[in-house]
Image 1 (cartoon, rainbow, N blue to C red):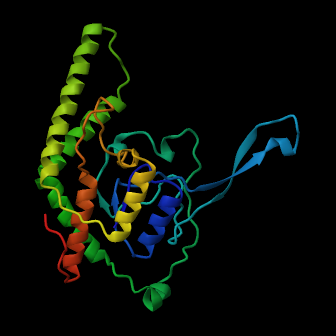
Image 2 (image 1 turned 120 degrees about the vertical axis):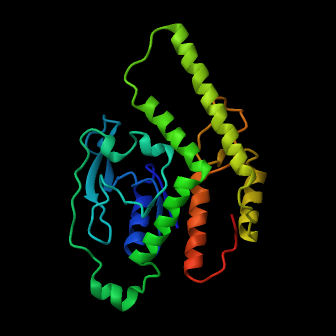
Length: 266
């Protein structure tokens, strides 16, 4: 399972596209990745004129997925959509002024390749069943109702084009925003109490311990930036990730589909 969002750009989406086209991974997350499928080269102007100390960045190539589709602009689509807050923000390549257009080339994968050596563990039918199961959870589970409210709240503020000049109105809006954040914090805290228990393998534990010894603030700094943060930097915020938890559930469903016993239960 490969998790993506609208900030998954360049090498991240090249990898996701290759894994998807080879049917070696299920892509989960925002509807598509960032869409930065171009290659740049930096030219130092001092090589041409010593008095110039600046540089220019020139686009020289495009990246294409194995199926021939350009990663530029459209990005890599998710097999199963589990939206993040970034999905309602204008942060993708397509939101920029004058981005390079999407195009395609002849695909590198052929039916001969797929039949002869690919032997992909994924099929269209399997992906559909996993997607249907995820859709049901996103309708039934309370954390997705919370996520829906978060998306609506974020979208309303991102798309806002007018700001009131009344001080009282601004204060009331601030109070409403803080109240909403607090309600979300409590809900995520509640969901986190029933979160799946994980166990570090020895290799991961050694890496984490080494980083803690060299940087005491490493663990705090490594928290996912995709989570909704509290209004104050020092505010304790629940360490619960809706997208990550759903990705784990999808992996469990996949394991069941392969007639294996999942190692975790919800």
